[in-house]
Length: 202
Ligand SMILES: N[C@@H](CCC(=O)N[C@@H](CS)C(=O)NCC(=O)O)C(=O)O
Image (cartoon, rainbow, N blue to C red; front, top):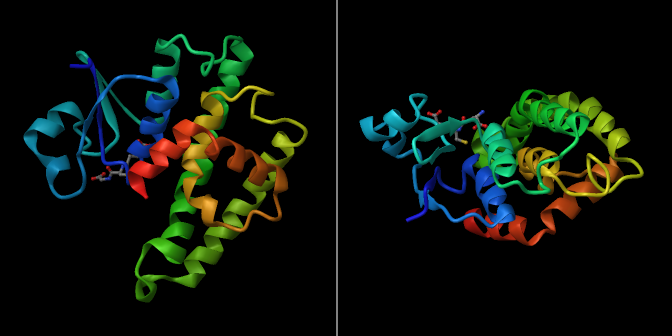
């Protein structure tokens, strides 16, 4: 039995970690914790007291926060997915935190109010406000990506995986105003591991 357990259904932020595990070719047990009460049992709360997913158990070591998990797994694998240079490592933290703090919630607001919620529960004003919040951040990302294939240069790294996985819902958005972001996001999701992880949730 593999030492690594990934908790969380693929239709949650666990998708991000499943993509990373596939990218790294890791063996893992996938524990199907969802929102049906399975995330609030004493057994699961012993793994993650927050009662949220994803969380991993790597032997006795437990870790929550999807993007931190991905950086840990990439570094632990000794993979080129985790950058070697100090500055590139720092940029990986930068883009991961940018995704978590600047993009994650407005993207969720936009997605919920355009596609995820049933039509009668959607609020177009919330969706429009979320897009307005996202616009300058996506414009900055577009500038950073201009003239390069990936965030750190020509190689796909966990910086790309983390940010692109946060931006999953924007695969259904009109990114015409930010062509470098669109090209990069398509490139990231064209990867076999991304396709495998998507197939688990769609
Ligand atoms: N920042 C966390 C967010 C985790 C999170 O909120 N997960 C959601 C599912 S996508 C969850 O478990 N919600 C149920 C709950 O918190 O009770 C991460 O990226 O891992």
